[in-house]
Image 1: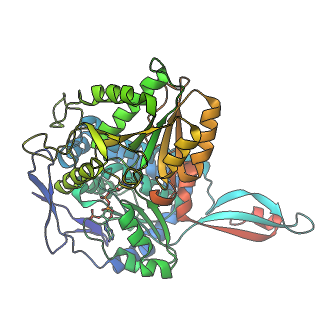
Image 2 (image 1 turned 180 degrees about the vertical axis):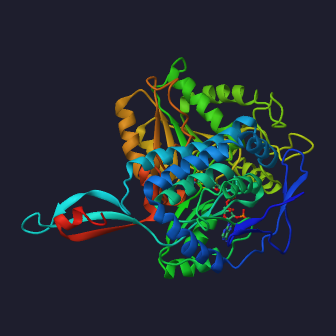
Image 3 (image 1 turned 135 degrees about the vertical axis):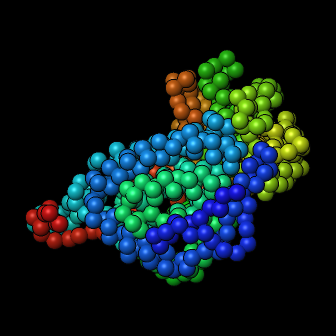
Length: 510
Ligand code: NAP
């Protein structure tokens, strides 16, 4: 069995203390172990700040962008091995494994491209100069400068490759060294990527550190120039944000948390339209892809009440055809959940929802004698008003149909009861209905995806997070913002205004 080590303070180190076992979720066989008690985290963060940070920033934006491309290529060269590890450790089908691994290398490559827009200067201009005095001689210019701290990235288990690389791409390009901490149940893929990064020797020493397991004391060592970027449950996010050291030092915190993402079918969409096919395909994909362990997956499906049985029949017909089983088999469309804990949580979640909903297909029962399997599960709410649908995220292949009147105002009220979402998807060809819903739910979302006959067959699915588009959402979704092209660097920059003689400002640092 492999022991997963951490790469900190310039070397690989195994932890100590109790053993945490990683299992193949298909066979339940142990595959790797982690020992969560590790190095002195105060020293680890200081090493990143003092050794990695200055060397990284000395490279400048263009060379850091080039490094991201080189890292993407180095990781891509191990693609087949990483896909196998993802199948083994996360129970991913090959398609799901590619979604994670190719998403990781694709995001690094995309940031290499975005970085080409940044010049050789040590800062990035934020907008144009503004006249502040009686004449333009006295002006102000807003700048973004890299923060001289360390970016601590605490990642979730569901995208071990992508989550690590998307955060790393933005921080490294901005000029901050990173400490990556993967979600432990699927840490094998993240650990292998860490080994590839270290073996490539592309990054200056100290710019990349990797912490496997533990990390519970990280927040105690964070300072005012550090960034804590967290992806995971809203409960852990709230705990980290409220940590006394984080509060006292005003540590910059970016939280990507859970979200009760909604899909809304408008009353104008008929059963024979392309938009309806797009709706069915996307809802099915969100339930099945990555076994529903996707922060952007749809959990609440709003359907006009008079159409709900028809939609239920169409979705059940699709979902009951999905082959659930060993992800190594070419026939399998959906693999297991990643861990016994996830299986227990998802079963408990289905049980809670089914108190106030009819189970149309799937359910909490066992699918195979071994492995952490659950069937694709669709429920129909007895009343869309029940709070549980708007509060409980069941992080698995589970969604609930919520009947509504078809009126835009009612859709807005129900969608916004989720308390803040990463993405909402709307399906309509009616401009007036779409306008009202988009603007009505906009303040509560990071992203709104609009399906229509005009995009059917062309649009990427709403669950896909793209480097060029913002990822994050207000309220329940964590209040964070990642990606979105060069906007993704903002958490790692300090924004300031410099005021003075315009001629001086134009030549600052050159
Ligand atoms: P989690 O239990 O909150 O864990 C997330 C990460 O935090 C893991 O690396 C975990 O480490 C670490 N952690 C837990 N407690 C900690 C503490 N006290 N101090 C420091 N680190 C701590 O979440 P999860 O179960 O892994 O992930 C699933 C959740 O993530 C879902 O709710 C999902 O919606 C959300 N998610 C959100 C996004 C997004 O972009 N918004 C993306 C993916 C997932 P260990 O694994 O070692 O315990």
